[in-house]
Image (cartoon, rainbow, N blue to C red; front, side):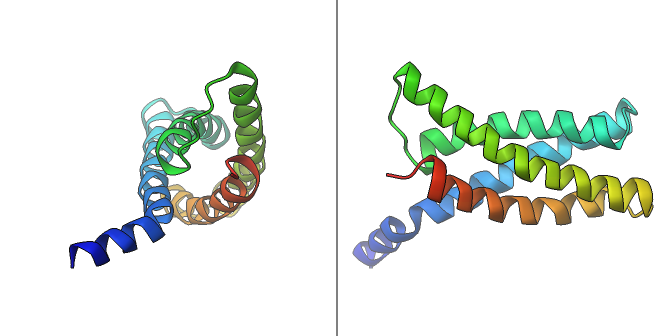
Length: 137
């Protein structure tokens, strides 16, 4: 039984860790957005931008160290990874920003519901970008 569990873990470790840290990243994003928008009343767009930056920084660190286990610590390799990571996240960040603007500011939907739905799409697209482009072996 233990061997079977170990085989399953070895096979799905990356996906499980990505989902775990993806949920944590989403919580960082949503919590930061909530604090900025509801406590500091920064507005939808600035709150989304602050939440994006902090969650992408959190995601880069966790993805590099634990999900994709990138061991490169050379400055050039880290700069390349980080640049690729943030660049891909800009695209999904703009998608999130667009969702928030259209559905919250224009259509007046509940901002927290839209934020959660938007983050679902962001997680999927970010995984594909990380797996296929940034931390590929």
